[in-house]
Image (tube, rainbow, N blue to C red; front, side):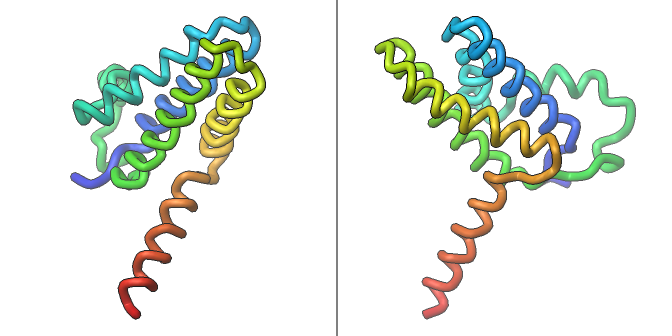
Length: 138
């Protein structure tokens, strides 16, 4: 279980992304993008996500009782989210509304679809791994 994260913690992160980006769309206040962006950067730099740390306090069962999510895939997903949220936020600062919304929509859809059960980032990560494997086999 060392290389995994309990699913409720991953879901909390995804829900934070969805709510924050939705708040950005509804209010046009780009500071809402800084919520998942700052938590994502924090987790990539320091190795733990403040949202997940908070939600850990409320998990009633031991970690081993939850469906595990692969830590490497989640780090890959977080990296993609941070990159796209950064582009969205910076574009919003320069009033490049189309670009800002486009990248925010990408992150929103990826998180929302992951909550529904299909991880787009995991699929991309798997395809990259397969490509690397096939390339190294030759």
